Length: 89
Image (cartoon, rainbow, N blue to C red):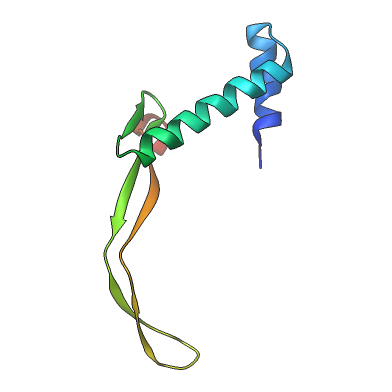
């Protein structure tokens, strides 16, 4: 798995900035995406995809261990929908 530190190395090289500054920029970008999505906006990045909040409806589920029916409340999920460019690579 690749983390922010690993992403920062090639970004720093391509943009001629320090790895520390590249990490700061990447982290600021990710924080802003999360902030915008949490405020109800969809974030569309051309060639990458769309970040959005989706509502998972309330439902009834069965506990496989006990067989008991349980109620799961509605919840909001953070979702990513990839663009067609990367979806079928």
